[in-house]
Image (tube, rainbow, N blue to C red; front, side, top):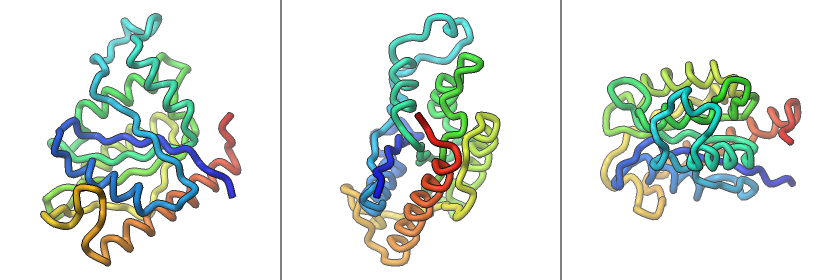
Length: 189
């Protein structure tokens, strides 16, 4: 059995991010042969094409971390019915300069939590459109819009509701299978 290296983004910069808590739960429930590394986005300057010929160290580190990954997982809130600005900024850095797109043929999955009833559905659709342009190989099902409520997760990522734990474990197994299928056809060097 192969081990797959998965880089994951937490789309929120908040110290109390419910999506960071969700990411802990996902890592706990994931198949054992997925190895996770967080792809930090908080230290990136705002992207500008002026940097394309001389990327700052933070952006070079992000691109290197993505290159060391075989797949990416986006765990993100929805801000104003779209992608959080910090996450979009990170995607812009990683997908540039033109012709050096870090997401090209990369297996990817999207999930998010929100206190609202529709979870992060609209924000995820916005993110999926960006990832399509970046030619990421997205897992399209199951979709996962988690309605967060106090007590659903412990701080260390334990899920207190059995049906939610089962759903998230199934999501991560599907992501594992998606990675395996994509990498069979489009191996990453």
